[in-house]
Length: 177
Image 1 (spheres, helix red, strand yellow):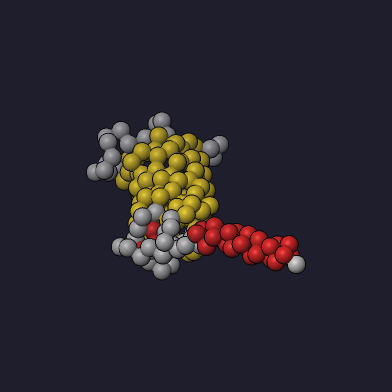
Image 2: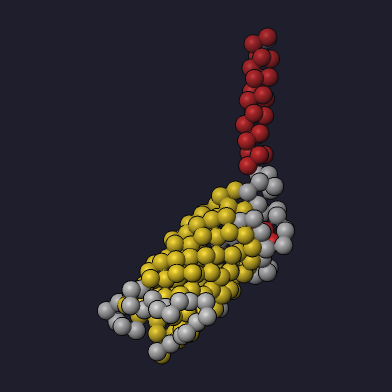
């Protein structure tokens, strides 16, 4: 009888100890790293000269009119960067993604682009860093690798389509602005 009672107490205590890490992981007040993926498309324009770029680069402005992101849902946003059309280097990239509820996630990026066999299509590869924003992303932190295609419809405009995959850490209960 004593052994049976001891086993029951041991089982109850073990179950309680197992619940403690689950409760801590579910705490909405703790930033947690999560897998992150964004798919986007929209128009781009090349500006030259662009006041935010050096003389040997052109400015590229993008508007994301269609997309979806993990933890964001349907997205919109803008970004701009400088591209050296000779070397393909992409620098000074910055922008934001906006969730359907208005929360924004800030992003910076750099990378490389090059024309494909079709001179009207460029393959672009960038490294992205996410830092801050508004709403639940006010204190966000993350990274992603991105693959994008730029389809030129004219000499200085076209459409981009891309996917970024990485990780994002944020406190889902944070509503700072």
